[in-house]
Length: 269
Image 1: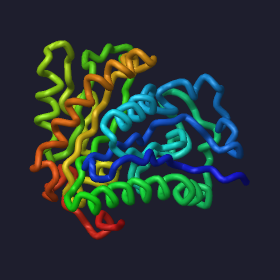
Image 2 (image 1 turned 120 degrees about the horizontal axis):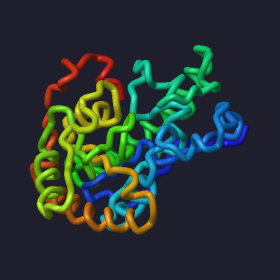
Image 3 (image 1 turned 60 degrees about the vertical axis):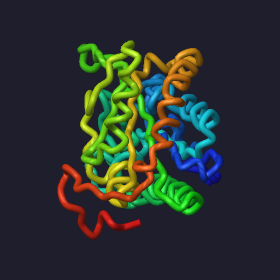
C-alpha cells in the first residue's frame, strides 16, 4: 500500500496570527479505494469536494502569508468536517448518488478510515493552530473556507457568500459588515446552512478552546475558474487582514455552543 497523506500544510509565517482551513479542498481517493463504485463524473460534483476552494485558499495563504491546512481526500471517503460520532461521517447516499463503496461498511473499515484520514487531518489542524499560538503568544484567528452550490433541489440560492457560526460572533459580525460594505453582493448569515454543528472542525478546534473564528462559504460558480478565484481572493484578503489586526480576535474567550454544554469528550485533543 502506497503512502497517502490525508492533509497538506502550507507553511507560512506562524506569527501572522491567522490560520486558514480547507476541509473539503480535494476530491482525491487513495488508489486502493478505486472510485468507491461511482462514475468519474461524481468526483467533479460538490458531493466529492468544495469546488474552487483549494485554489482560493492557496492564493489567500500566499497573499496573507498565513499557514493553511488542506484536506487531501474526498469527503465521499470520510467527511473531515463531521464529528466521529456523526451519522453522516461516511455517507451511503449523497445528493441522490448511492455510494457503493460505503455500503455496506464494516466497523473495522470505519475505524480504518478514521485512523488513516480523519484523525491525522485533525491532528494537523491542531498542530498548525498550536504553532501559530505559540509563535505569537496569543490565540490565532481561524478562518475556514468552503463552497456551496448555486441551487439546491431546483431552488436558486441568492447569496454570493455566507458566514456560518455557532455562538462566538467576535469575528463574524465585523466579517459580515466588511463583506456587505461594497453593496455588490448578498451575504448569508448562517444561510444556507447553520454553523452550529457539534463535533465539526470549528466546534472542535475553535469553539471548545475559545478561539475566534468564522466559516466562509462562497458560491461555487463564482470561484469555479481562475478569474473567479482571483477576484474573490482580492475581495477577501484585505478583509481578513483587517480582522486579523483586531486585538480582541486574538484572545481566548469561550462561548457556550448552541448545540449544548461541553463534555469530557469535547475536551479530547
